[in-house]
Amino acid sequence: MPFARKFENGMGFPKVGQVIKGFTIESVSVSHVNIKGGYYEYPTEIIVKGEGGANQVKRAFKEFHDDRRTLFSGYGNPYQCVHGKIDVQSLGGGMFLIASRGACVCIYLVPELKIFMGYLLKNRILANGSDEDEWKKVIVEYMMEYESPCCG
Image 1 (cartoon, one colour):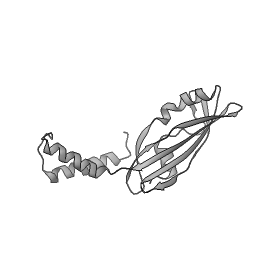
Image 2 (cartoon, rainbow, N blue to C red):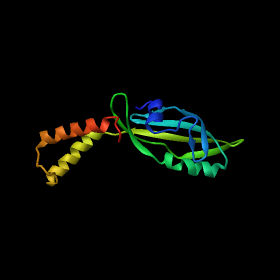
Image 3 (cartoon, rainbow, N blue to C red):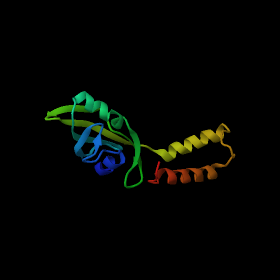
Image 4 (cartoon, rainbow, N blue to C red):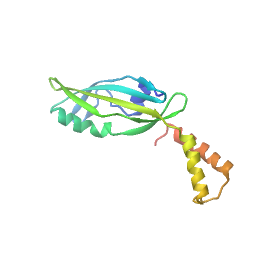
């Protein structure tokens, strides 16, 4: 599973002091909870300060919370992750709490890619007509590139 720190970094959480659409990030807190095998939740709290109301905060952070990403655990297992629905509460004095409960679920990418490659071969969609050994190499090469922390 991606630990809370990996979820925070991998999902692109804002940093303390960063200003997003007029709201300054005061604090970010992310933890993780093991729900069941391969499924984890990430309770998060972001405190922001700025002029406006809860609806303005929600609009400012909606795009961020709609993001979906694939993250890898320390063992290299891929997880499909989301931020979760946000709840915004006024704390007074121009301060707001943005709470959400993100989630990650383990995905089994290599078996899915093998099934997909088999489909492409069966339906003669692959351009080079390669055999099973060749497309297994393609999957390995793809996974190496997919897992690299490059520029995506």
